[in-house]
Image 1 (tube, rainbow, N blue to C red):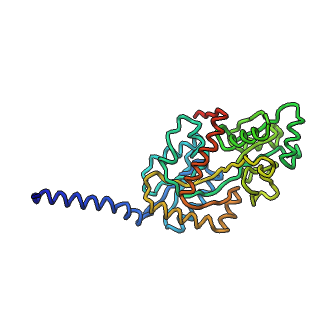
Image 2: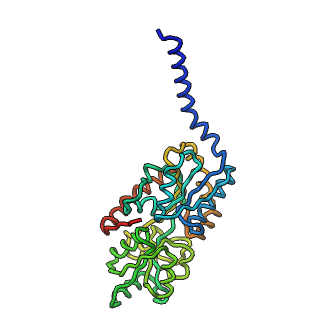
Image 3: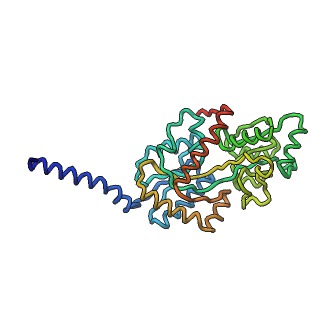
Length: 324
């Protein structure tokens, strides 16, 4: 027969367990009770920074707490992910990042110390910036077919720029060149802005980047998308230009540290998904070159898995590595 002391200890253990079980639920119900930090893996003023601020304002409007934007740059975005992976999973530290830091960089950089699927929980896919083939406007190309004729007639290889090693622009440039039978001289840049400057100056012939409004100054020949893009009227897809395998999404998504309560993830997903579905939001973010997406956390996980397979093959075939 149990002693009174043993019974008392058993009751204490039972009550403690019930408290621990209900604490996350109660915390999720009370959330948010203080400001939320949204870490952006790119600099202030970049496209993703503007998108993050737009979403932050909506979270504040709906949930009633300020959203503090914190830009953490470095390592091609990996610095931000490494820091958020170690944050307390209480819904007060979130991350907005892109396919490059989330999926591509870990497959190319041995120093990366996070796994997006293991150390983060997805909240929502924000949107997609189309990867585009740009040309020096002085060359007078109207289509990819014009580019191919020029490349065949030119005595030396065409020059093809991309916005840095290991970026989606780099991988799309490699994939497009392989599928088109081009053997260009590749030129790596530190971002798309200096690439555009050199295109306008005639230092390079072509470029492959994720589209933004600054690219309207050069000729956009084609988009690496499934379908034509609304905010790029008259621009054909690479698929319709004869290269059906060259489809690439430079997506942005919001994540939280693994272990964040599901109720908080669901509340954030519902808030942001409703915002992204508004026509005015779609029009606002299209100004930054983004097609809004939204959807469930599971759709983010599915995109990550698909990109690992697709681009893992390109990285392996090209023997691509990136050092910090």
